[in-house]
Image 1 (cartoon, rainbow, N blue to C red):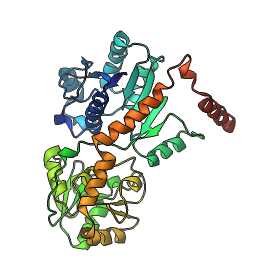
Image 2 (cartoon, one colour; image 1 turned 90 degrees about the vertical axis):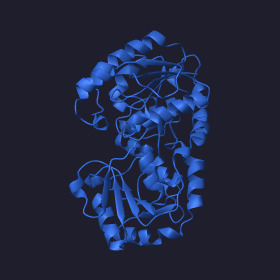
Image 3 (cartoon, helix red, strand yellow; image 1 turned 45 degrees about the horizontal axis):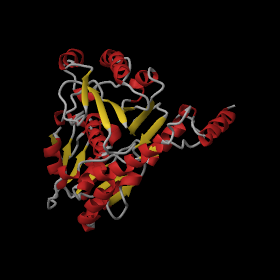
Length: 364
């Protein structure tokens, strides 16, 4: 299989840009594709650590610097009208056009920001390979959680299930997550914004009488309790995470997946979260952490978390969220997609066609 893999134009596809989750996911996905033996043509910038058969530069470092300026790269507005995307997308269309062959697949993680690229090559399959965002459009979609799949179906008024969509959890390189003896603190890791529940974690840790460390970026004035460590890169962040008694994820909105939850569990660190969104799938209540629905439950969970089996937490995380698990799931998914390569494949099989007709009749 030949894959045209589109990175986002605001980063270099290297570990130095690990504060951008789309960037790190793209690097890992390229590794999975190569593990499966596929040909990968990567459309990115200049510096690259993702394995590929060809790197095609569509934005230079100089252009990124000129357009992004002093803004943080991870805060770039992922939108087709962003000057960086308006620069990159026509180049993507041209470069893919030079290289495409029948039965190629275009893989993206940029949602509507790159829709114009796949629309320019309608004869190719287009797959959004790890959806944890709004604005998806592709004919074939892989979601990071069932919860987010259903949110998207609801918001897009999709009345019938889509047979060639799938759910494959976010995946990680397990060896990058150390195992350590827990120390006397709990951890918050994420943006310092109200909707991430930062006020909840500060109050819960205070009421539980435990030390709190916080890693992230945003508005530090929202921190009312604990020690702010700021934004740390992957190695330092994972070290702190592995030594925490628990990671607390009190996200207020419906979290599409919440990558930090399985990442913590790969260290053996329990997770205390809210009880909706992706956490309902990544946090096994009473076994790998606790899911909470009120402040008092967060306090109780902090006090109870030391009884959980950190070895079991890590073993389960490796089984579900490792690169090896992802390779098996993506291998099966692409094998299913390959059954569509028949004459007129893009008209879809009978079952999907029938469902689309039913959906149209419901809309009327």
